[in-house]
Amino acid sequence: NVWWRLLNHLIVLAEEPIDLPAEPLVRQFTWGELPVALAYGFPEVARCDRLLADGRRASIAGLKSVLDGGGYPHCRVLPEVRPLLASWTRCRALGDHLEGAWGGVQADRQYRALLDAALRLSRPGGQPAFSAPDSPAWDDSLLAAATRMTGRDSARLRRLTTDGRTSNRTDDSLPKPAFDNESAGLAQLRSNWSPASPGMTVAYGLRPPRIELSVDTRMLLAGTWDVEITQAGRRLEPTGNWQQTCWLSDHDMDYLELCLDLTNGVELERHILLARE
Image (cartoon, rainbow, N blue to C red; front, side, top):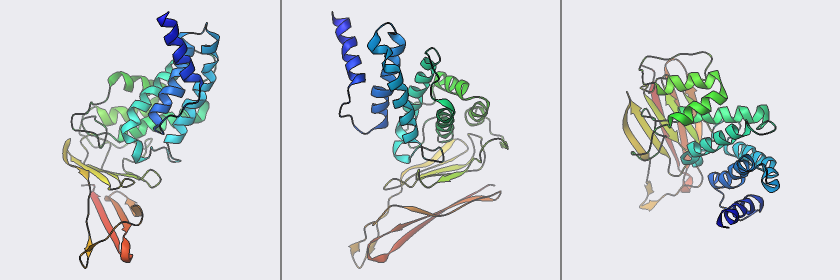
């Protein structure tokens, strides 16, 4: 009947290597979450039960591929971070009811790093950085499930970044509010953990780079940081990507310096400074 044909189609989709786009979200849905969901929903079907190990491996490999060594997703995959977090959260939740651990200590550490990155790469209103103005804010059930799985530190970071109070937040057990990650092409200049903290997020791994600046929960500017330079009437073109040449974060300020090589040996520099007070 139709029901069995549909189930067989889903099993074949999860079993057979197919030519999928390189987007992490498509691959995670197809080779990560789908096999785990089939194993959970139909354990009496041998083909579904055998999919569990493959789904776990694909989910863990996908999580590792999205994050760099410092625990941040590359700026190119920022639009997919929250859907990916939701999919991995569902896999972990289903895995609690299935035989065997979800992925071990390393996978747990990577999962928590992704949640922490998603929390800090959020606008004051809860929308993802660089998203459309009408994009949805955090889903409460996703946040509750993810922080429950990751433990106390992530739960504390969640309270600091989403509860809306404006006091200055300091907590030695948490990472510094500001960060720069060259391999992810991301930097965030931020005074403290309050969602009302002045802050600028810079995705310099994109071309052109994107920036967002907010103060006291208000978004002051957001979009691409375009530039056009001409020399003797001829436009100079980039010969590479933006590179971070200096990063400084102390009790007075956050400072980011970027450079871009252009044709004819010209170098363009940009300097961003956010004062603590």
